[in-house]
Image (cartoon, rainbow, N blue to C red; front, side):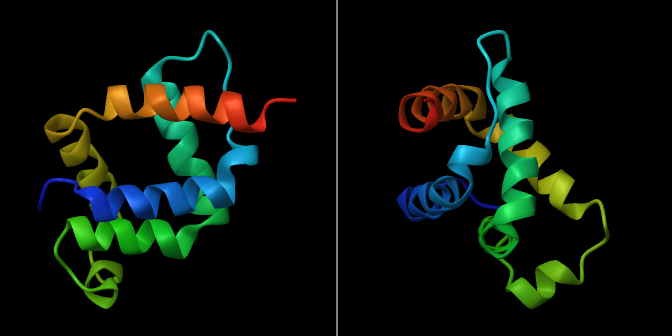
Length: 103
């Protein structure tokens, strides 16, 4: 697996654009809860984009990624959580969704 890069950020921004209004956050949610909510919402509304992102980070084709065991996407997300500053990223996602999508 590889570290996240700017191209990945553009993919995440695209996913956020598709799911942003559906990502529910609250003041008392932890960054991890926001992250899980974002991923669950992305899986529902932007499945192809999320699959492409996880396959790309795994340095696989989408077809190869889809052939992996059922728990492999969780393994990729765990790897990202351990090797990237996802807590900070999801804190920013939370702030951004609150600014853009709260009424």
